[in-house]
Amino acid sequence: MRTQEELDRELEQAGQALERARKLETVLRDLQAQREQCCQAEAEARDVLAREEADVDELEGISLASFWARLKGEREERLDQERREALAAKARYDAARRALEDLEGRLTSVQKERDSLLTQQSRYQALLEEKEELLRRMGGEQARELIRLEEENREIQRQLREVQEAASAGVEALRALEEMGSALDSASNWGTWDIFGGGMLATMAKHSAMDDAQRLADQARWALSRFRTEMADVSAVEVPDVEIGGFAAMADYLFDGLFADLYVQGQISDAQAGVSRSLDQVTQLLSSLDRERQTLEGNAERLERQREALLAAR
Image (cartoon, rainbow, N blue to C red; front, side, top):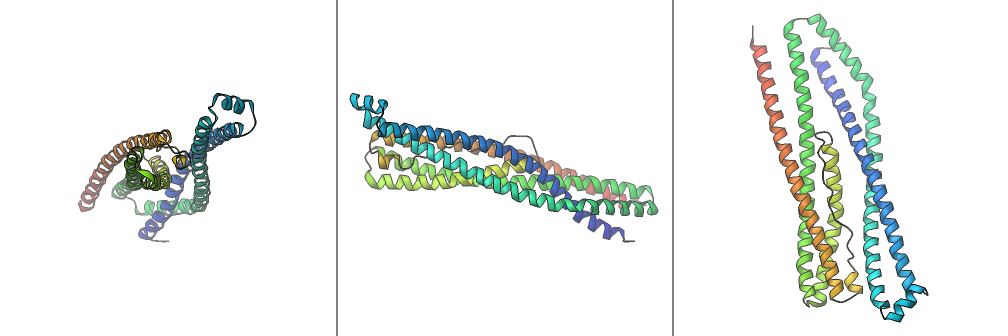
């Protein structure tokens, strides 16, 4: 028969494995819901791209629409607009496809880890039965009260770990959003100069900043998705998605002129607004997590004082 200390150590190890498995169940449900949303978004983006490319093909080829546009002298203008819309649709589709592929990979990884951890269930039950038998032999009200305090404290520590993990994911999401916001600010500044005749230098600098923003947008989406799965164990509060589309980053390379510059600048402004909203929401959620952490730490200190008083009593 093992000692109580040995049993407690093994129970803690097995319990942590099962706790992690239970948490992964919640993560899996959230990832599956996200996958459904991403599948729908990817399908919608694919349909939009197909329609936009068909519009371009129709104007470029021999069709009634192309004939009337030529007759009215509007063909080149309409063709430029349709190509811009097709570029924007392609960028949105690529972003949706990347998000779906990332979720599929994470789902597979989480399922494998969950299945591996669930093998600890039978071992945990056997350890509980062994400890129960040991405590029955020891007897006494003090032993029962210590067990109650230990179980309550174990639950508080579990909740604290979940809050801390969620806060860590939130801080990472906040950092990713701030970096993306900085890239968008740079793109906006260069874009303003470009509109007022900054020339090729301003155009190239703007596109470089936009490329950075698009790369950081993917990172921000991933960080917010992770924050969302971590928050699922703590609260039912909805974590925002970063509200940005794909940039038609090549639009005013291919279609020079004020209209193209204004079109791209409008995309940048929309993305800035989405990032600003997401930053505000994530900041509020982090404040809420900090309040929850303080409450749990206070409860843990209260239990420790009760335990010390119980052990000091004669």
